[in-house]
Image 1 (tube, rainbow, N blue to C red):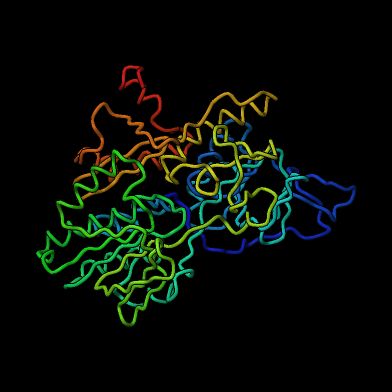
Image 2 (image 1 turned 180 degrees about the vertical axis):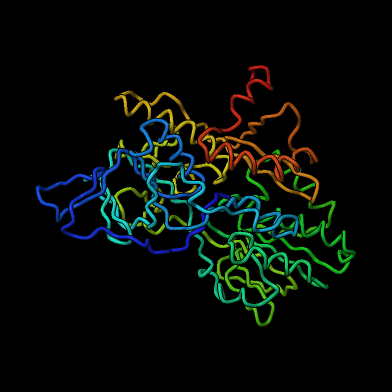
Length: 445
């Protein structure tokens, strides 16, 4: 999961008409009434992709020439929320003030983007400020839509429901799990693209482990209802996960999509996607909801979107297909790969190279292969580390069979990756494990 939480705080400042522009601004007209801010590079979004590219652009063009547009006061490392929901980590450890992760000297515009004018090389923020740019990097993340499930988000007021996908609901998952007595524990996967597609089932495995540890497993019926026709998109890892499902007596229902939560009755309603209109009601003692997700609202209706509302970029160079000075990274793009922080890391290295070439009037020469990674947490001490490319083929870093559960990989997920995130990726210093993969496989992979 990428590290961005949307809370639409209004910026405490504004530009006043008639006041002449600061040094780093320029005028499109001869008068000051059309004052605009101007930066060589504008980055939209202060999540993992936005901060990483802000750091890289600072080194490329200088801090004073870069601005990051982001409304949130806090930045969260969301991959750790899987462990927060299972009581293994504290939610406080996942967040840091945005001011502390914005690269020093880079302008932080505390607002959200409302309007794109790529033909004019400008964007307009929620508080009305117009900002012009030479190069635009769009890193707006993905939008959660709990409201598309009938009965939510108000259903979260009831203590049996949680979701590891938002700051407001992740601790509710842990409360529901530790207060579980007996009955159904139900976990859902929606009928939309999602960030960190393994997370909806990670909490299922952790819940199973917790209930076994506390002696409640014999009274629990664990159910995973997914809209997908498969347990996992890459066969090698799916086969390993099916073995775990069978060994631990977990119930998986494919092509089942959550459409309603009746929190007062502790009922979840799922539609059978293979027979539209047919529904089934599941009673629950615990319910973990993975919400439907979609592209950022700011992109919808803009000149930058594809037919689905996502940022329309070249899947190899991350350059926009129509506007060559516009680029994208992370969950907001239409790149056909899983939306993870690991994917953002690999993309950041490619995008850095692409922008360097474009700034020098050259042609991009480094290609993104779709690399992404999903550490599938299968217990409080084991992980299956799934790594794969655009073609769904394993692209493993370590010279071992990563489809097998590993304690070492768990410690990497829980302890190493957060450090790598804060001190590597966000500093623009970590571009994924590609070079290390080559070394570990003696240059043969």
